[in-house]
Image (cartoon, rainbow, N blue to C red; front, side, top):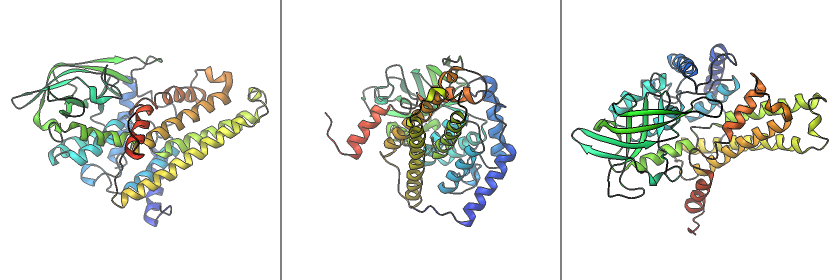
Length: 391
């Protein structure tokens, strides 16, 4: 693993930091992206990023990127979080679907979907989970029926991230009615404006709609919106899942910045005897802050090792499951520690840092569930990495 940066990489970091300092919206400027107003505000910011080729720096220039490598992408992510960049409303597309389109898409599909995805003009939601098929995705029942020129989709998807407002959906459907489990599945790209689609937003505890149920009733999808080979959808989906669980979705910069804020919070509270009176005299919380930082740093180093391997032509396989377990549990640790430091103040749902910690904590609880529950990921690790037998 090489932790030194070239002059060109350092110049890239400086250019990125300068642009972000001048363009990242001030804290509190954008509404939540899980609201209609905030969704459009985030989209507008990402269009600005795209115009200056900062939206997808590692993509080829023809699709709106800068044609740089994975090292520069990680550098950009560090600077993005350091500058306080907002959540990416386009993350389902640029971090999950795009790597799959690069691997399995036709040239026409790449030209059609990637630039619009990078600019934020078309936002994607996930059409994977169903009422009876969550982490066990192979048990899905939504079906695709062959018709002249394409396919007709029927069924229901749930917990579709960004589903309340997105323009497009990617998902798996059973295209062979006689098939079972992982066989006979096909990966489709579906316009959310298609006749026969009904979306039903799912309100979260705060009333915002970060997810939706999607109902498909005789929805036609043309042949050129099949991603990969018909019947080989499981292999295509696993490529997307690898991106979701591995490097793409959760860069270490996210957690390094969170632990910096956590350390600042600890210092502020300990320095104020009245606010920190509930902490007690022992060093347990100091140890938890140190553990959070250490684990975030370990994740950073592991990510750099993975990036180095990728640059040498190696792939990311089932070890992505270990990564997913690690970052999701780290996120919970960071936010649980913050709430314990805040004590009763953690319940003050007001604008600013206090509300941000509570919001972050509530979201962190979903981490061990989405992208495949951590229980399932541990099974993957046991069977595919450790070669342990099934019980």
